[in-house]
Amino acid sequence: MPELPEVEVTRRSFAHAIEGATVQTVRLGKPLRWPLGCAPEWLVGRRVLSVGRRGKYLLIGLDHGLVLVHLGMSGSLRFAPVLPAAGAHDHFDLVTSLGTLRLHDPRRFGAVVYVDSLDDPQALKLLGHLGPEPLSDAFDLVQFQAQLKRHQSAIKSVLLAGEAVVGVGNIYASEALFLAGIRPTVRAARLNRSRAARLHAAIVQVLGQAVALGGSTLRDFSSASGQAGYFQLQTMVYGRAGLPCHVCASPVRLLKQGQRASFYCATCQKP
Ligand SMILES: [Zn+2]
Image 1 (cartoon, rainbow, N blue to C red):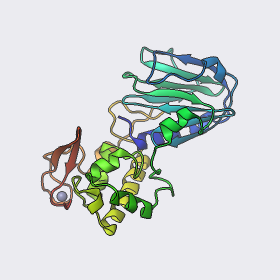
Image 2: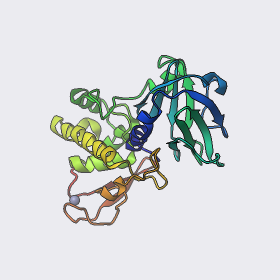
Image 3: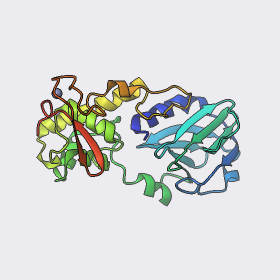
């Protein structure tokens, strides 16, 4: 599943190339998770002003309104001056004067949604509850510490819930907790200020590194210009159950938390 770094890498791979383009045609394939929210013709003639991101949503800003794109479980975007004819899993083409943006999504949990503004009820429903962006100044240490104090559940689950910080999915939560030396099962409220501060720094470091390396992990992930990400090679614990910890050589452990796999080192990560 594309996590925040993959979405950010995707954004960077086409944001500049599509800026200033005029929409010429919109082609829809099979239904995605939510309907587009307007007639496709309604987008024709609009100009693309910017491509932003909030959590795992890409925000394609038009001269009127925005198109929100979510990659779901298996989605990927491509942007190129010319693309081959749409295949069975290509469910959205935004054909512009500078190239075509295409959503390829075999499982169709992705979405493309038009909204008039970020105050639109649909935009508020999708984006309004999202926590602070981990790679921006909005991810404030004091607020993060206060958020953790409010939760009695395991820190890993609190990170995944997206209220204390948005977009820290399973892989990056496992990696950040390793880097901070914190077991995934520790109750969030039990983390003292210095451990919470280490976790805050670790989240920023792990996500920033992943973006810098070009995204990760998804088998079929490729950024919109077609380059594969390779953060998976760098994981310290995620996906390494039974293998020796890179720091202390103890075997990495695997446990189920909720429905999710958690990987940790019992020596390096303290309860
Ligand atoms: Zn270790």
